[in-house]
Length: 126
Image 1 (cartoon, rainbow, N blue to C red):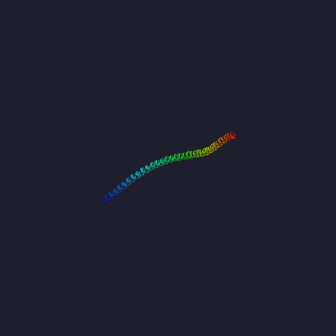
Image 2 (cartoon, rainbow, N blue to C red):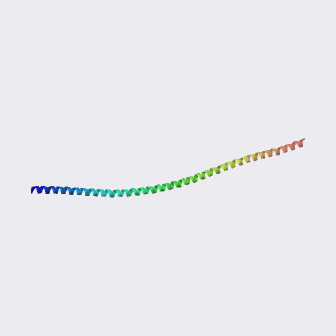
Image 3 (cartoon, helix red, strand yellow):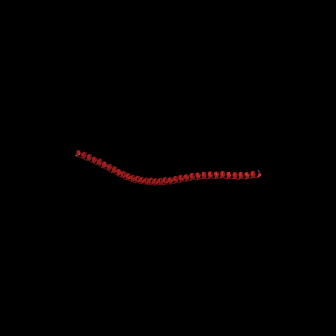
């Protein structure tokens, strides 16, 4: 009888240990399940952040392309303005040369007229 009680007591302890182990495994399983849920939430949050970052990047790239196009257009306009300015400056120099030449011709014409007048005066004096 004592041996049967010892055996029964040993089986109760073994059953209690098995029950504790089972409870521990259940708690561990619950922690793992919660960790999985948390990880899934984190993955969804990270995915949303990545999508937002990609959208922002695409927007910035579009802005960059637009700014580069505006810069190219402004550069082309500046270059055209510089070419026009150079053409105006060349034309101005040509006109100044013509005016200077015209003034020289007028001065020669005035000198010729004065010379004719003086010649006429000299001839009348002789």
